[in-house]
Amino acid sequence: MLKLTPAERSELRSEAHALKPIVIIGEAGLTPAVIKEIDSSLNSHGLIKVRVFGDDREARIGMYDTICTELKAAPVQHIGKLLVIYRPKLEGTKETKLVKKGKGMREVTIVKPSPSGTKKPTVSKVMVKGNERVTQGGNVKRAKPRQSSAKKASLENS
Image (tube, rainbow, N blue to C red; front, side):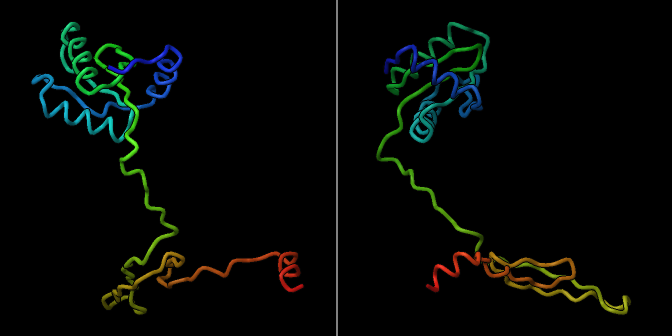
């Protein structure tokens, strides 16, 4: 079991305050599937909350100790039916997030009513780029070129 100093435990408690329970232990108790789920949650999040359904306090304490010893995690807090568990994230886990600038191409359906109002409306599907939008009238507007200051323009020209 991982040991924490009181200062570390206090900091982790404050971080865990805003978290919602990720894993819920039902009436079947601490099954291998639940332990596996807690392990994967600890790998991805590091600090998690677990909700235990059941009124037996001694059973909850036993589950808490079992989880922490089997998964080499640190017990942070046990309030009522909530257990807060911490284990440092593994360095080898995938931490890279895809950074996407703007939106890609998307398909937009434009429905224009007929000019006379008696015929069927015209329906057309248009591919719109990330810097374009569809106006209320059904026209596609492109983004204006980025404005630059006169000061920067004069510096670039000189």
